[in-house]
Length: 51
Image 1 (tube, helix red, strand yellow):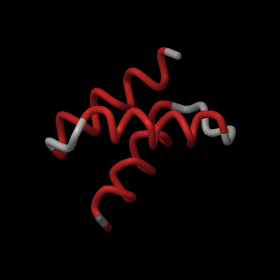
Image 2 (cartoon, rainbow, N blue to C red; image 1 turned 90 degrees about the horizontal axis):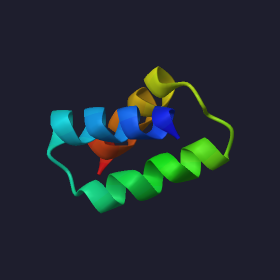
Image 3 (cartoon, rainbow, N blue to C red; image 1 turned 135 degrees about the horizontal axis):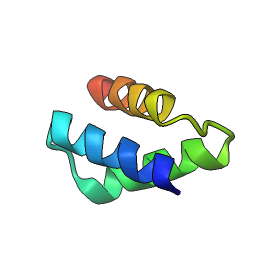
């Protein structure tokens, strides 16, 4: 749970995106098995840069 919080805070701070959208995306990644906060943040930034 702490990994998700760290990743969400980092992505929101860096991108200024909607917090709820970031939470949903990070939660899906976490449930898929990505548990490292750095990896979650990186994947979140990659996805949001495409949008």
